[in-house]
Length: 430
Image (cartoon, rainbow, N blue to C red; front, side, top):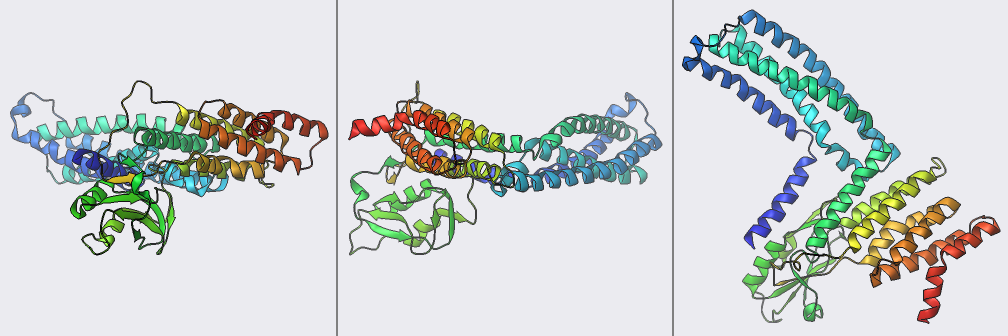
Protein backbone atom coordinates (compact mmCIF):
# COMPACT_ATOMS: atom_id res chain seq x y z
CA UNK A 1 0.00 0.00 0.00
CA UNK A 2 2.74 2.57 0.72
CA UNK A 3 4.26 1.85 -2.68
CA UNK A 4 0.92 2.37 -4.43
CA UNK A 5 0.45 5.68 -2.62
CA UNK A 6 3.99 6.79 -3.48
CA UNK A 7 3.58 5.83 -7.13
CA UNK A 8 0.32 7.78 -7.43
CA UNK A 9 1.73 10.89 -5.78
CA UNK A 10 4.98 10.74 -7.75
CA UNK A 11 3.20 10.28 -11.08
CA UNK A 12 0.95 13.27 -10.43
CA UNK A 13 3.89 15.42 -9.30
CA UNK A 14 5.98 14.54 -12.35
CA UNK A 15 3.10 15.23 -14.71
CA UNK A 16 2.65 18.70 -13.21
CA UNK A 17 6.41 19.27 -13.38
CA UNK A 18 6.46 18.29 -17.04
CA UNK A 19 4.18 21.24 -17.85
CA UNK A 20 6.77 23.71 -16.51
CA UNK A 21 8.85 25.06 -19.37
CA UNK A 22 11.82 25.97 -17.17
CA UNK A 23 12.53 22.55 -15.63
CA UNK A 24 14.42 20.82 -18.44
CA UNK A 25 16.43 23.91 -19.49
CA UNK A 26 17.46 24.35 -15.85
CA UNK A 27 18.67 20.74 -15.69
CA UNK A 28 20.54 21.22 -18.96
CA UNK A 29 22.25 24.32 -17.57
CA UNK A 30 23.31 22.44 -14.44
CA UNK A 31 24.73 19.58 -16.53
CA UNK A 32 26.55 22.03 -18.80
CA UNK A 33 28.25 23.77 -15.89
CA UNK A 34 29.15 20.40 -14.38
CA UNK A 35 30.72 19.35 -17.71
CA UNK A 36 33.02 22.36 -17.66
CA UNK A 37 34.35 21.38 -14.25
CA UNK A 38 34.57 17.69 -15.15
CA UNK A 39 37.04 18.63 -17.87
CA UNK A 40 39.27 20.21 -15.21
CA UNK A 41 39.44 16.87 -13.36
CA UNK A 42 41.46 15.41 -16.26
CA UNK A 43 44.36 17.67 -15.33
CA UNK A 44 44.88 15.78 -12.07
CA UNK A 45 45.41 12.48 -13.91
CA UNK A 46 48.30 11.13 -15.94
CA UNK A 47 46.45 11.60 -19.24
CA UNK A 48 48.49 14.69 -20.09
CA UNK A 49 51.27 12.49 -21.46
CA UNK A 50 49.06 10.45 -23.80
CA UNK A 51 46.44 12.94 -25.00
CA UNK A 52 46.96 15.15 -28.07
CA UNK A 53 47.81 18.81 -27.48
CA UNK A 54 44.96 21.26 -28.11
CA UNK A 55 45.75 24.95 -28.13
CA UNK A 56 43.69 27.30 -26.00
CA UNK A 57 43.04 29.55 -29.03
CA UNK A 58 41.31 26.79 -31.00
CA UNK A 59 38.98 25.96 -28.10
CA UNK A 60 38.23 29.63 -27.47
CA UNK A 61 37.37 30.14 -31.14
CA UNK A 62 35.04 27.14 -31.18
CA UNK A 63 33.35 28.17 -27.94
CA UNK A 64 32.92 31.74 -29.18
CA UNK A 65 31.18 30.52 -32.33
CA UNK A 66 28.90 28.29 -30.27
CA UNK A 67 28.08 31.04 -27.78
CA UNK A 68 27.07 33.55 -30.47
CA UNK A 69 25.03 31.05 -32.51
CA UNK A 70 23.29 29.36 -29.59
CA UNK A 71 21.82 32.62 -28.30
CA UNK A 72 20.24 33.23 -31.71
CA UNK A 73 18.94 29.67 -32.01
CA UNK A 74 17.54 29.67 -28.47
CA UNK A 75 15.74 32.94 -29.19
CA UNK A 76 14.35 31.45 -32.41
CA UNK A 77 13.20 28.37 -30.51
CA UNK A 78 11.35 30.42 -27.91
CA UNK A 79 9.67 32.58 -30.57
CA UNK A 80 8.59 29.52 -32.57
CA UNK A 81 7.21 27.79 -29.48
CA UNK A 82 5.28 30.88 -28.40
CA UNK A 83 3.80 31.12 -31.89
CA UNK A 84 2.77 27.46 -31.70
CA UNK A 85 1.19 27.96 -28.29
CA UNK A 86 -0.81 30.90 -29.58
CA UNK A 87 -1.95 28.84 -32.55
CA UNK A 88 -3.32 26.17 -30.22
CA UNK A 89 -5.59 28.65 -28.46
CA UNK A 90 -6.83 30.11 -31.74
CA UNK A 91 -7.36 26.97 -33.81
CA UNK A 92 -8.18 24.32 -31.21
CA UNK A 93 -8.91 25.03 -27.54
CA UNK A 94 -7.06 26.89 -24.77
CA UNK A 95 -7.60 23.79 -22.60
CA UNK A 96 -5.15 21.89 -24.83
CA UNK A 97 -2.36 24.35 -24.03
CA UNK A 98 -0.80 22.26 -21.19
CA UNK A 99 -0.37 19.30 -23.53
CA UNK A 100 1.38 21.39 -26.18
CA UNK A 101 3.67 23.15 -23.73
CA UNK A 102 4.63 19.75 -22.30
CA UNK A 103 5.80 18.55 -25.74
CA UNK A 104 8.92 16.50 -25.01
CA UNK A 105 10.74 17.19 -28.27
CA UNK A 106 10.35 20.98 -28.05
CA UNK A 107 11.36 21.08 -24.40
CA UNK A 108 14.33 18.84 -25.16
CA UNK A 109 15.42 21.07 -28.04
CA UNK A 110 15.14 24.24 -25.98
CA UNK A 111 17.08 22.57 -23.18
CA UNK A 112 19.90 21.58 -25.56
CA UNK A 113 20.13 25.08 -27.05
CA UNK A 114 20.13 26.86 -23.68
CA UNK A 115 22.48 24.29 -22.15
CA UNK A 116 24.92 24.63 -25.06
CA UNK A 117 24.87 28.40 -24.66
CA UNK A 118 25.63 28.20 -20.94
CA UNK A 119 28.34 25.59 -21.55
CA UNK A 120 30.05 27.75 -24.15
CA UNK A 121 29.95 30.87 -21.97
CA UNK A 122 31.29 29.15 -18.84
CA UNK A 123 33.86 27.14 -20.82
CA UNK A 124 35.03 30.25 -22.66
CA UNK A 125 35.53 32.17 -19.41
CA UNK A 126 37.44 29.26 -17.90
CA UNK A 127 39.66 28.81 -20.99
CA UNK A 128 40.51 32.52 -21.28
CA UNK A 129 41.57 32.67 -17.65
CA UNK A 130 43.95 29.71 -17.92
CA UNK A 131 41.79 27.38 -15.85
CA UNK A 132 42.78 24.29 -17.87
CA UNK A 133 46.02 22.52 -18.54
CA UNK A 134 46.71 20.27 -21.55
CA UNK A 135 44.52 17.33 -20.47
CA UNK A 136 41.69 19.58 -19.40
CA UNK A 137 41.75 21.45 -22.72
CA UNK A 138 41.52 18.19 -24.65
CA UNK A 139 38.54 16.95 -22.61
CA UNK A 140 36.87 20.35 -23.01
CA UNK A 141 37.49 20.12 -26.75
CA UNK A 142 35.84 16.68 -26.88
CA UNK A 143 32.86 17.95 -24.89
CA UNK A 144 32.55 20.95 -27.17
CA UNK A 145 32.58 18.81 -30.32
CA UNK A 146 30.04 16.43 -28.79
CA UNK A 147 27.68 19.25 -27.79
CA UNK A 148 28.10 20.90 -31.18
CA UNK A 149 27.10 17.65 -32.92
CA UNK A 150 24.19 17.20 -30.52
CA UNK A 151 22.99 20.73 -31.27
CA UNK A 152 23.04 20.10 -35.03
CA UNK A 153 21.12 16.80 -34.69
CA UNK A 154 18.61 18.37 -32.31
CA UNK A 155 18.12 21.38 -34.56
CA UNK A 156 17.35 19.21 -37.60
CA UNK A 157 14.88 17.10 -35.61
CA UNK A 158 13.31 20.11 -33.94
CA UNK A 159 12.67 21.91 -37.26
CA UNK A 160 10.40 19.04 -38.34
CA UNK A 161 8.67 19.05 -34.96
CA UNK A 162 8.11 22.80 -34.70
CA UNK A 163 6.58 22.81 -38.19
CA UNK A 164 3.85 20.54 -36.80
CA UNK A 165 3.61 21.80 -33.23
CA UNK A 166 0.47 23.84 -32.69
CA UNK A 167 -1.21 22.54 -35.84
CA UNK A 168 -4.77 21.39 -35.36
CA UNK A 169 -4.12 17.79 -36.34
CA UNK A 170 -1.24 17.39 -33.88
CA UNK A 171 -3.23 19.08 -31.12
CA UNK A 172 -6.13 16.69 -31.63
CA UNK A 173 -3.70 13.76 -31.59
CA UNK A 174 -2.11 14.99 -28.35
CA UNK A 175 -5.49 15.40 -26.64
CA UNK A 176 -6.65 11.98 -27.87
CA UNK A 177 -3.48 10.28 -26.63
CA UNK A 178 -3.69 12.03 -23.26
CA UNK A 179 -7.32 10.94 -22.95
CA UNK A 180 -6.48 7.37 -23.93
CA UNK A 181 -3.71 7.30 -21.32
CA UNK A 182 -6.11 8.56 -18.64
CA UNK A 183 -8.70 5.97 -19.66
CA UNK A 184 -6.11 3.19 -19.50
CA UNK A 185 -5.06 4.26 -16.01
CA UNK A 186 -8.67 4.38 -14.86
CA UNK A 187 -9.35 0.96 -16.39
CA UNK A 188 -6.45 -0.47 -14.40
CA UNK A 189 -7.82 1.14 -11.23
CA UNK A 190 -11.52 1.94 -11.84
CA UNK A 191 -12.02 2.56 -8.12
CA UNK A 192 -8.61 4.23 -7.61
CA UNK A 193 -7.49 1.06 -5.78
CA UNK A 194 -10.35 1.47 -3.31
CA UNK A 195 -13.57 -0.53 -3.07
CA UNK A 196 -16.93 -0.02 -4.69
CA UNK A 197 -19.64 2.06 -3.03
CA UNK A 198 -21.93 -0.36 -1.27
CA UNK A 199 -23.59 -0.67 2.07
CA UNK A 200 -22.04 2.48 3.50
CA UNK A 201 -23.36 4.81 0.81
CA UNK A 202 -26.42 5.61 2.92
CA UNK A 203 -25.89 8.25 5.59
CA UNK A 204 -22.51 9.17 6.92
CA UNK A 205 -21.02 12.38 8.25
CA UNK A 206 -20.38 14.85 5.47
CA UNK A 207 -17.04 16.50 4.77
CA UNK A 208 -17.29 19.75 2.83
CA UNK A 209 -14.87 21.42 0.46
CA UNK A 210 -12.96 24.38 1.81
CA UNK A 211 -11.91 25.71 -1.61
CA UNK A 212 -13.39 26.70 -4.95
CA UNK A 213 -12.13 24.94 -8.05
CA UNK A 214 -11.75 21.58 -9.75
CA UNK A 215 -10.64 18.40 -8.05
CA UNK A 216 -7.31 17.58 -9.68
CA UNK A 217 -6.06 14.73 -7.52
CA UNK A 218 -7.30 12.65 -4.61
CA UNK A 219 -4.76 11.31 -2.13
CA UNK A 220 -6.45 7.95 -1.61
CA UNK A 221 -3.56 6.73 0.54
CA UNK A 222 -3.94 9.77 2.77
CA UNK A 223 -7.67 9.11 3.09
CA UNK A 224 -6.88 5.52 4.05
CA UNK A 225 -4.64 6.78 6.85
CA UNK A 226 -7.37 9.12 8.07
CA UNK A 227 -9.88 6.28 8.03
CA UNK A 228 -7.54 3.98 9.93
CA UNK A 229 -6.85 6.60 12.59
CA UNK A 230 -10.57 7.21 13.06
CA UNK A 231 -11.41 3.49 12.79
CA UNK A 232 -13.96 4.46 10.15
CA UNK A 233 -14.61 4.20 6.44
CA UNK A 234 -14.63 7.08 3.97
CA UNK A 235 -16.81 7.36 0.90
CA UNK A 236 -15.47 9.63 -1.84
CA UNK A 237 -18.31 11.77 -3.20
CA UNK A 238 -16.47 13.53 -6.04
CA UNK A 239 -14.00 12.30 -8.63
CA UNK A 240 -11.16 14.24 -10.29
CA UNK A 241 -12.69 16.80 -12.61
CA UNK A 242 -15.62 17.72 -10.38
CA UNK A 243 -16.18 21.40 -9.61
CA UNK A 244 -16.48 22.04 -5.89
CA UNK A 245 -17.04 25.03 -3.64
CA UNK A 246 -17.57 25.57 0.08
CA UNK A 247 -20.76 23.72 0.98
CA UNK A 248 -20.22 20.96 -1.61
CA UNK A 249 -19.90 17.53 -0.03
CA UNK A 250 -16.68 15.85 -1.15
CA UNK A 251 -16.69 12.82 1.18
CA UNK A 252 -18.69 10.99 3.81
CA UNK A 253 -17.27 9.40 6.94
CA UNK A 254 -19.04 6.20 7.95
CA UNK A 255 -18.78 4.18 11.12
CA UNK A 256 -18.24 7.10 13.51
CA UNK A 257 -21.00 7.61 16.06
CA UNK A 258 -22.53 11.10 16.28
CA UNK A 259 -21.30 11.40 19.84
CA UNK A 260 -17.68 10.91 18.79
CA UNK A 261 -15.47 13.40 17.00
CA UNK A 262 -12.29 11.40 16.60
CA UNK A 263 -11.85 12.33 12.95
CA UNK A 264 -10.58 15.55 11.42
CA UNK A 265 -12.81 16.77 8.61
CA UNK A 266 -10.30 19.45 7.65
CA UNK A 267 -7.55 16.87 7.27
CA UNK A 268 -9.79 14.76 5.06
CA UNK A 269 -10.64 17.80 2.91
CA UNK A 270 -6.93 18.49 2.42
CA UNK A 271 -6.52 15.11 0.73
CA UNK A 272 -8.48 16.54 -2.20
CA UNK A 273 -6.15 18.68 -4.31
CA UNK A 274 -8.26 21.48 -5.77
CA UNK A 275 -7.00 23.84 -8.46
CA UNK A 276 -8.32 26.43 -10.87
CA UNK A 277 -8.13 24.16 -13.91
CA UNK A 278 -8.89 20.57 -14.80
CA UNK A 279 -6.05 18.23 -15.71
CA UNK A 280 -5.80 15.32 -18.12
CA UNK A 281 -3.87 12.71 -16.12
CA UNK A 282 -6.56 11.61 -13.65
CA UNK A 283 -9.64 13.06 -15.33
CA UNK A 284 -10.53 11.07 -18.46
CA UNK A 285 -13.71 13.07 -18.97
CA UNK A 286 -11.71 16.27 -19.39
CA UNK A 287 -10.07 14.93 -22.54
CA UNK A 288 -13.51 14.14 -23.98
CA UNK A 289 -14.66 17.67 -23.13
CA UNK A 290 -11.65 19.24 -24.84
CA UNK A 291 -12.12 17.14 -27.98
CA UNK A 292 -15.78 18.14 -28.05
CA UNK A 293 -14.82 21.81 -27.67
CA UNK A 294 -12.38 21.56 -30.59
CA UNK A 295 -15.15 20.07 -32.70
CA UNK A 296 -17.53 22.85 -31.62
CA UNK A 297 -14.95 25.46 -32.57
CA UNK A 298 -14.52 23.85 -35.98
CA UNK A 299 -18.30 23.85 -36.52
CA UNK A 300 -18.70 27.52 -35.66
CA UNK A 301 -19.89 29.75 -38.56
CA UNK A 302 -16.55 31.57 -38.57
CA UNK A 303 -14.58 28.34 -39.16
CA UNK A 304 -17.12 26.01 -40.83
CA UNK A 305 -14.84 22.96 -40.87
CA UNK A 306 -17.03 19.85 -40.60
CA UNK A 307 -14.06 17.66 -41.53
CA UNK A 308 -12.39 18.36 -38.20
CA UNK A 309 -15.59 17.47 -36.34
CA UNK A 310 -15.78 14.19 -38.29
CA UNK A 311 -12.16 13.40 -37.38
CA UNK A 312 -12.94 14.02 -33.71
CA UNK A 313 -15.99 11.78 -33.85
CA UNK A 314 -13.68 9.04 -35.10
CA UNK A 315 -11.29 9.73 -32.22
CA UNK A 316 -14.21 9.53 -29.78
CA UNK A 317 -15.18 6.11 -31.13
CA UNK A 318 -11.63 4.83 -30.68
CA UNK A 319 -11.57 6.09 -27.10
CA UNK A 320 -14.88 4.49 -26.18
CA UNK A 321 -13.87 1.22 -27.84
CA UNK A 322 -10.74 1.34 -25.69
CA UNK A 323 -12.85 1.95 -22.60
CA UNK A 324 -15.28 -0.82 -23.47
CA UNK A 325 -12.65 -3.50 -24.06
CA UNK A 326 -12.65 -6.10 -21.26
CA UNK A 327 -9.59 -6.64 -19.11
CA UNK A 328 -8.68 -9.93 -20.76
CA UNK A 329 -5.78 -11.88 -19.36
CA UNK A 330 -5.40 -9.58 -16.36
CA UNK A 331 -6.14 -9.94 -12.70
CA UNK A 332 -8.98 -8.08 -11.08
CA UNK A 333 -8.16 -4.47 -10.12
CA UNK A 334 -6.10 -4.48 -6.96
CA UNK A 335 -7.48 -3.09 -3.73
CA UNK A 336 -4.89 -1.27 -1.65
CA UNK A 337 -7.26 0.96 0.29
CA UNK A 338 -9.94 -1.20 1.87
CA UNK A 339 -11.48 1.62 3.90
CA UNK A 340 -12.15 3.94 0.96
CA UNK A 341 -15.31 3.69 -1.13
CA UNK A 342 -14.97 5.22 -4.59
CA UNK A 343 -17.67 5.58 -7.30
CA UNK A 344 -16.98 4.46 -10.84
CA UNK A 345 -16.97 6.71 -13.87
CA UNK A 346 -20.43 7.09 -15.38
CA UNK A 347 -20.62 6.07 -19.03
CA UNK A 348 -23.69 8.28 -19.41
CA UNK A 349 -21.68 11.29 -18.23
CA UNK A 350 -18.82 10.41 -20.57
CA UNK A 351 -21.19 10.27 -23.54
CA UNK A 352 -22.66 13.62 -22.50
CA UNK A 353 -19.19 15.12 -22.43
CA UNK A 354 -18.30 13.68 -25.82
CA UNK A 355 -21.39 14.04 -27.99
CA UNK A 356 -23.84 16.59 -26.55
CA UNK A 357 -22.15 19.66 -28.03
CA UNK A 358 -21.25 17.96 -31.32
CA UNK A 359 -24.86 16.91 -31.88
CA UNK A 360 -26.06 20.44 -31.19
CA UNK A 361 -23.43 22.32 -33.21
CA UNK A 362 -23.38 19.81 -36.06
CA UNK A 363 -27.15 19.44 -36.44
CA UNK A 364 -27.11 21.70 -39.48
CA UNK A 365 -24.34 19.74 -41.20
CA UNK A 366 -25.65 16.61 -42.84
CA UNK A 367 -22.22 14.99 -43.09
CA UNK A 368 -21.52 15.51 -39.38
CA UNK A 369 -24.96 14.20 -38.40
CA UNK A 370 -24.50 11.11 -40.56
CA UNK A 371 -21.06 10.37 -39.14
CA UNK A 372 -22.29 10.94 -35.58
CA UNK A 373 -25.19 8.52 -35.96
CA UNK A 374 -22.92 5.92 -37.56
CA UNK A 375 -20.49 6.30 -34.64
CA UNK A 376 -23.24 5.92 -32.06
CA UNK A 377 -24.58 2.88 -33.89
CA UNK A 378 -21.13 1.29 -33.75
CA UNK A 379 -20.76 2.00 -30.04
CA UNK A 380 -24.20 0.52 -29.35
CA UNK A 381 -23.00 -2.86 -30.65
CA UNK A 382 -20.01 -3.18 -28.31
CA UNK A 383 -21.95 -5.33 -25.87
CA UNK A 384 -21.77 -3.04 -22.86
CA UNK A 385 -25.33 -2.32 -21.72
CA UNK A 386 -24.61 1.09 -20.21
CA UNK A 387 -22.74 2.17 -23.34
CA UNK A 388 -25.56 0.83 -25.48
CA UNK A 389 -28.17 2.82 -23.56
CA UNK A 390 -26.05 5.98 -23.74
CA UNK A 391 -25.46 5.56 -27.48
CA UNK A 392 -29.16 5.13 -28.21
CA UNK A 393 -30.13 8.10 -26.06
CA UNK A 394 -27.69 10.35 -27.89
CA UNK A 395 -28.76 8.96 -31.27
CA UNK A 396 -32.37 9.95 -30.54
CA UNK A 397 -31.19 13.37 -29.40
CA UNK A 398 -28.99 13.89 -32.46
CA UNK A 399 -31.89 12.95 -34.74
CA UNK A 400 -34.27 15.33 -32.95
CA UNK A 401 -31.79 18.19 -33.34
CA UNK A 402 -31.16 17.38 -37.00
CA UNK A 403 -34.90 17.30 -37.73
CA UNK A 404 -35.15 20.92 -36.61
CA UNK A 405 -32.38 21.98 -39.00
CA UNK A 406 -33.09 22.93 -42.64
CA UNK A 407 -32.31 19.60 -44.31
CA UNK A 408 -33.74 18.14 -47.50
CA UNK A 409 -36.38 15.43 -47.06
CA UNK A 410 -34.11 12.74 -48.47
CA UNK A 411 -31.35 13.75 -46.04
CA UNK A 412 -33.75 13.50 -43.12
CA UNK A 413 -34.88 10.10 -44.35
CA UNK A 414 -31.28 8.91 -44.37
CA UNK A 415 -30.75 10.20 -40.84
CA UNK A 416 -33.92 8.48 -39.58
CA UNK A 417 -32.74 5.24 -41.13
CA UNK A 418 -29.37 5.52 -39.41
CA UNK A 419 -31.05 6.27 -36.08
CA UNK A 420 -33.42 3.36 -36.49
CA UNK A 421 -31.39 1.17 -34.13
CA UNK A 422 -32.27 3.47 -31.24
CA UNK A 423 -35.96 3.66 -32.08
CA UNK A 424 -36.27 -0.12 -32.54
CA UNK A 425 -34.72 -0.76 -29.14
CA UNK A 426 -36.94 1.85 -27.53
CA UNK A 427 -40.05 0.16 -28.95
CA UNK A 428 -38.84 -3.27 -27.84
CA UNK A 429 -38.22 -2.02 -24.32
CA UNK A 430 -41.68 -0.50 -24.13
